[in-house]
Length: 170
Image (cartoon, rainbow, N blue to C red; front, side):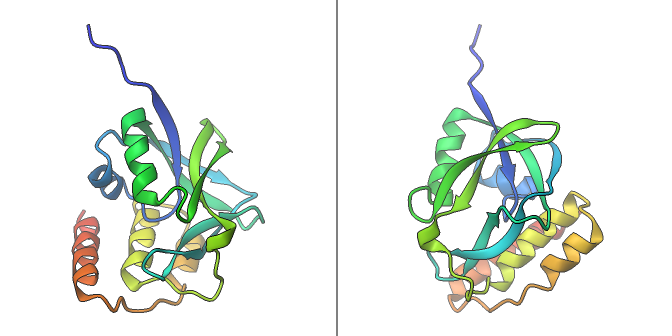
Protein backbone atom coordinates (compact mmCIF):
# COMPACT_ATOMS: atom_id res chain seq x y z
CA UNK A 1 0.00 0.00 0.00
CA UNK A 2 1.34 3.41 -0.95
CA UNK A 3 1.16 6.29 1.48
CA UNK A 4 -0.66 9.40 0.37
CA UNK A 5 1.56 12.48 0.11
CA UNK A 6 0.71 15.34 2.48
CA UNK A 7 -1.24 18.09 0.74
CA UNK A 8 -1.96 21.79 1.25
CA UNK A 9 -4.70 24.08 0.07
CA UNK A 10 -3.52 26.91 -2.16
CA UNK A 11 -5.58 30.07 -2.75
CA UNK A 12 -4.68 31.32 -6.25
CA UNK A 13 -5.65 34.82 -7.37
CA UNK A 14 -3.36 35.76 -10.28
CA UNK A 15 -2.01 33.95 -13.32
CA UNK A 16 -2.42 30.61 -11.49
CA UNK A 17 -6.22 30.98 -11.34
CA UNK A 18 -6.79 28.95 -14.49
CA UNK A 19 -6.68 25.21 -13.74
CA UNK A 20 -4.85 24.36 -16.96
CA UNK A 21 -2.19 27.01 -16.35
CA UNK A 22 -1.54 25.74 -12.83
CA UNK A 23 -1.52 22.06 -13.85
CA UNK A 24 1.09 22.85 -16.51
CA UNK A 25 3.26 24.18 -13.69
CA UNK A 26 2.52 21.51 -11.07
CA UNK A 27 0.82 18.22 -11.89
CA UNK A 28 -0.89 17.60 -8.54
CA UNK A 29 -3.01 20.78 -8.61
CA UNK A 30 -6.63 19.73 -8.10
CA UNK A 31 -9.31 22.39 -8.12
CA UNK A 32 -11.44 22.24 -4.97
CA UNK A 33 -13.59 25.30 -5.65
CA UNK A 34 -13.63 29.07 -5.44
CA UNK A 35 -13.98 31.54 -2.62
CA UNK A 36 -14.41 35.22 -1.92
CA UNK A 37 -12.49 37.25 0.64
CA UNK A 38 -14.21 40.57 1.21
CA UNK A 39 -11.29 42.10 3.17
CA UNK A 40 -8.69 41.74 0.40
CA UNK A 41 -8.08 43.45 -2.94
CA UNK A 42 -6.29 42.25 -6.06
CA UNK A 43 -3.48 44.59 -7.12
CA UNK A 44 -1.12 44.58 -10.09
CA UNK A 45 1.69 46.09 -8.03
CA UNK A 46 4.35 43.45 -7.49
CA UNK A 47 7.58 44.02 -9.44
CA UNK A 48 8.33 40.84 -11.34
CA UNK A 49 11.77 39.59 -12.28
CA UNK A 50 10.98 40.86 -15.79
CA UNK A 51 10.32 44.36 -14.32
CA UNK A 52 6.59 44.27 -15.17
CA UNK A 53 3.70 44.28 -12.71
CA UNK A 54 2.49 40.97 -11.30
CA UNK A 55 -0.45 40.34 -9.00
CA UNK A 56 -0.38 40.89 -5.29
CA UNK A 57 -3.05 41.34 -2.67
CA UNK A 58 -3.69 43.95 -0.03
CA UNK A 59 -5.95 43.78 2.97
CA UNK A 60 -8.15 46.72 2.07
CA UNK A 61 -11.52 45.44 1.08
CA UNK A 62 -12.66 45.73 -2.52
CA UNK A 63 -13.02 41.95 -2.44
CA UNK A 64 -10.84 39.17 -3.82
CA UNK A 65 -11.97 36.07 -5.68
CA UNK A 66 -9.70 33.02 -5.41
CA UNK A 67 -9.52 29.50 -6.77
CA UNK A 68 -8.63 26.92 -4.14
CA UNK A 69 -6.40 24.04 -5.23
CA UNK A 70 -5.10 21.04 -3.36
CA UNK A 71 -1.39 20.48 -4.05
CA UNK A 72 1.00 17.88 -2.75
CA UNK A 73 4.02 18.81 -0.66
CA UNK A 74 6.61 18.17 -3.39
CA UNK A 75 4.71 20.30 -5.88
CA UNK A 76 4.27 23.09 -3.33
CA UNK A 77 8.07 23.35 -3.16
CA UNK A 78 8.20 23.53 -6.97
CA UNK A 79 5.52 26.23 -7.00
CA UNK A 80 7.37 28.18 -4.30
CA UNK A 81 10.37 28.27 -6.63
CA UNK A 82 8.33 29.22 -9.70
CA UNK A 83 6.58 32.02 -7.79
CA UNK A 84 9.87 33.35 -6.42
CA UNK A 85 9.50 32.85 -2.68
CA UNK A 86 12.19 34.94 -1.06
CA UNK A 87 12.72 36.83 -4.33
CA UNK A 88 9.63 39.04 -4.40
CA UNK A 89 6.90 36.87 -2.94
CA UNK A 90 6.40 35.58 0.58
CA UNK A 91 4.14 32.75 1.67
CA UNK A 92 1.18 33.75 3.81
CA UNK A 93 -1.78 31.92 5.26
CA UNK A 94 -5.31 33.17 4.68
CA UNK A 95 -8.65 31.78 5.70
CA UNK A 96 -11.00 31.16 2.78
CA UNK A 97 -14.68 30.72 3.70
CA UNK A 98 -15.71 27.12 3.09
CA UNK A 99 -12.11 25.89 2.90
CA UNK A 100 -10.32 27.18 6.00
CA UNK A 101 -6.59 27.82 6.06
CA UNK A 102 -4.89 28.11 2.67
CA UNK A 103 -1.44 29.24 1.71
CA UNK A 104 -1.00 32.00 -0.84
CA UNK A 105 1.74 34.25 -2.11
CA UNK A 106 1.93 37.92 -1.13
CA UNK A 107 4.24 40.53 -2.59
CA UNK A 108 7.20 41.35 -0.38
CA UNK A 109 7.09 45.02 0.64
CA UNK A 110 10.48 45.45 -1.06
CA UNK A 111 8.92 44.45 -4.40
CA UNK A 112 5.82 46.66 -4.48
CA UNK A 113 5.77 49.35 -7.14
CA UNK A 114 2.43 51.03 -7.79
CA UNK A 115 3.74 52.64 -11.00
CA UNK A 116 4.36 49.41 -12.91
CA UNK A 117 1.95 47.97 -15.46
CA UNK A 118 1.56 44.28 -16.36
CA UNK A 119 2.42 42.81 -19.72
CA UNK A 120 -0.66 42.33 -21.90
CA UNK A 121 -0.29 38.53 -21.89
CA UNK A 122 -0.07 38.44 -18.09
CA UNK A 123 -3.27 40.42 -17.57
CA UNK A 124 -4.96 38.19 -20.13
CA UNK A 125 -3.94 35.05 -18.18
CA UNK A 126 -5.44 36.51 -15.00
CA UNK A 127 -8.62 37.52 -16.82
CA UNK A 128 -9.02 34.10 -18.45
CA UNK A 129 -8.73 32.49 -15.03
CA UNK A 130 -11.46 34.78 -13.70
CA UNK A 131 -13.70 33.99 -16.66
CA UNK A 132 -13.03 30.24 -16.34
CA UNK A 133 -14.33 30.36 -12.77
CA UNK A 134 -17.27 32.61 -13.73
CA UNK A 135 -16.29 35.33 -11.28
CA UNK A 136 -18.78 38.22 -11.27
CA UNK A 137 -18.78 40.49 -14.34
CA UNK A 138 -17.79 43.68 -12.43
CA UNK A 139 -14.72 41.89 -11.04
CA UNK A 140 -13.70 40.66 -14.50
CA UNK A 141 -14.36 44.09 -16.02
CA UNK A 142 -12.11 45.73 -13.43
CA UNK A 143 -9.27 43.38 -14.39
CA UNK A 144 -9.90 43.87 -18.12
CA UNK A 145 -9.56 47.63 -17.59
CA UNK A 146 -6.06 47.41 -16.05
CA UNK A 147 -3.63 49.28 -18.34
CA UNK A 148 -1.00 47.02 -19.92
CA UNK A 149 2.26 47.23 -21.81
CA UNK A 150 3.66 45.02 -24.55
CA UNK A 151 6.42 42.64 -23.54
CA UNK A 152 9.65 43.83 -25.25
CA UNK A 153 11.17 40.32 -25.18
CA UNK A 154 9.88 38.57 -28.32
CA UNK A 155 10.72 35.04 -27.14
CA UNK A 156 8.97 35.47 -23.76
CA UNK A 157 6.09 37.33 -25.43
CA UNK A 158 5.48 34.58 -28.02
CA UNK A 159 5.79 31.79 -25.45
CA UNK A 160 3.27 33.42 -23.13
CA UNK A 161 0.82 34.36 -25.88
CA UNK A 162 0.92 30.69 -26.94
CA UNK A 163 -0.09 29.77 -23.40
CA UNK A 164 -2.87 32.38 -23.49
CA UNK A 165 -4.19 30.90 -26.73
CA UNK A 166 -4.31 27.44 -25.14
CA UNK A 167 -6.19 28.84 -22.13
CA UNK A 168 -8.73 30.48 -24.47
CA UNK A 169 -9.83 27.10 -25.84
CA UNK A 170 -13.13 25.80 -24.44
